[in-house]
Image 1 (tube, rainbow, N blue to C red):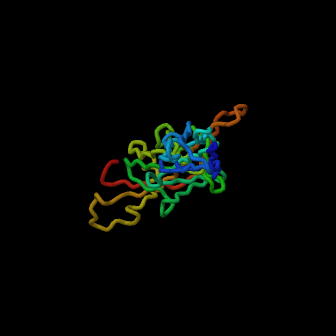
Image 2: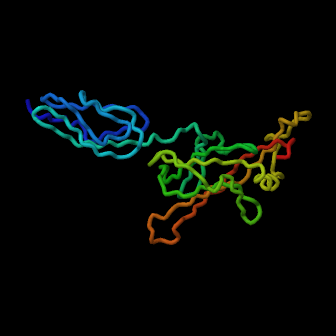
Image 3: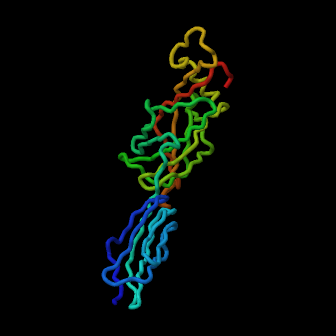
Length: 259
């Protein structure tokens, strides 16, 4: 018998978080009595008798591990790096929004007409990607604010609480999730500002239409502001504000109600 030599089939294993994965370790020639691989990514484990590494890794990251195979003559080792990717974002939990950081243009890849639609009191979950040349970036974002522009002196009515957001995904799958609340009390001003431009239900309502089915449809100019942390601490200011181009938000309200 001889010391086991682990087959160097790979030195880097790429798995995805929360997805089952398996890797079968093997040796050339000599038999193995015990396998070990300490410091595996959370969620993965190794069979000490078969050398099968399996499970669903739970935490994205890069993990450097030392796989070992032991028999009565000694121990052979192989350094293996596990790269655990973030699973990305779930597309159906919100409305996808892409922001071009060069032009400030806003697009909605999951909206058939390129607009957001909502009515008073709605929460719109938005999944915002910050992109350059069509590639999403993972940036040091500290605030994302979305609001309606008023007529008066470019005032903004903010519609997500304090610019709060959560990051979903990582690297080129990064999106920032916000809840855009169409707060009736905050929309009262903008609704009155843009009432004159409204169409009823998108067109004139026929005579005798049930009032509960009649809505006022308003296209209000909307803006998203992003605040980023300077990566170079020697620069002033420490935070950078960026604003998007203005885009239309379609809001409908029932004209039979006060809201």
